[in-house]
Every structure is written in C-alpha cells, then in structure tokens.
Image (tube, rainbow, N blue to C red):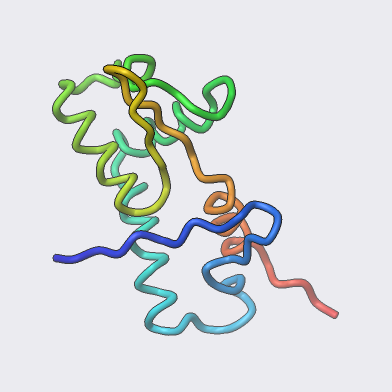
Length: 120
C-alpha cells in the first residue's frame, strides 16, 4: 500500500488540508490525505510518541528522550517512521541521534478540520 505524506505548509499561511467537517463533505482526495494522518495516530504507541514529541521542551525531541514507551527500540523506530510518512513529524540527524519535530502547520490544519465551521 502506498501512502502519501501531507505537504508541509508554512505556519503563517497554513491552510487546512480540508475544510471543517461541518462545512462540506470531503472530496475523495481530501479524505484520503486526512485518513493517513488519523490512521497514523490510531495506534496508542504512535499517539504517545507524537504526544511526547509535541509536548517536549522546544517542540522537538531526541529519539533518546522519547524511546521509553514500553516497546523495543526497533518498534519505536518503526512507529516514528510511520508518523513521518504521514507528514506528522519531521526529523533531522545530529551526530548519532535523530531529533523529531511536530509540524505546527499540520497540527493547526488537523485542529481546523475538527472544529465547527464559522456561521455567518
């Protein structure tokens, strides 16, 4: 199965991947992109890793700081890879460690998706 990562948007100009669910039905493409994000977060270990990165001081975390989630290191790496592939995390190697960062624009887009559309 091939999955596509969500585009990374600049925080100031971040448009949601989709309109709020109460505004109009999603197109097939919007639903596909959105489902990839939520599927990645549907696993408790991934959700916990995502939360650890998002709440870490400075908005990024070394894999060495977030690997104690009750599974083996190879399993942690697998879950972090799935979160990256879904476009929810970015990573950067620094020496021997990899640092993960939550993309703020993706969080903002997910939040807007789940909010009620503004009524005029």
